[in-house]
Image (tube, one colour):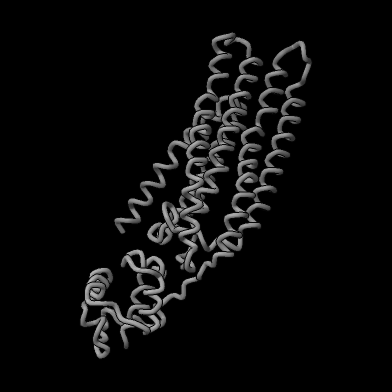
Length: 327
């Protein structure tokens, strides 16, 4: 086996594109392409660097007759990585910018969905309005279900638009020349917007508690007023989440193409476990929320379950990742 074939096998086993290997070697992608095309051979310094990079001897790289079983990779073991073109990368980023607003809207609708139920429930407790509990609850639940249904429809529609690009999140892939550079440049340009939206989003989520505490200070015995203030808190928190999600989806699209952060090659290997745990976690959280709320009819308090679940979730994922690394 000649040097060019060995280099291709070693690079693919490491899960690197030609461009990524070029960055590791401080050479151009064209140089790596020539090495793999048997058009040229690296000088001695670069050959030594390749041996250290892949953990093989220089004799293995240079001598065609050496095919140590430790390094000889069968064709079955070599995965043919999907290649992402410049056109495909641009199309993916464009779709993600559009769907980021839709996904943020779905979350906003879900956050707003219980407001009508809460306010009508509080109104039914005021004798002057003469609103029966069953009517208030029925109307509130209908509006809640309608908003959630609309949100789910929008979410599914957005998911369908990006379904062809799901492999970017789950699989290791290669990019054509220039793609990584283009995405990295756009990510750098977007960094200021991403930082600003995160500051605004987090700030609004924190300030969302102000109306509720303001209602308590003003008149803590007026249940209708407190419910309205709580609803205002929901709205502020929802707007904050819109900022966080809309910019977060766009930022994640850059990381998917660059295979960085949560979408690095190492994390993709443990993704199936993380996805299963995440799905189970939020299903359990939803079951607890609905079970507690429906059994106690204490909707004005049960929303705290989501806050606690949101705080605990990153810790669960962190522990899962640590266990995956140890394995």
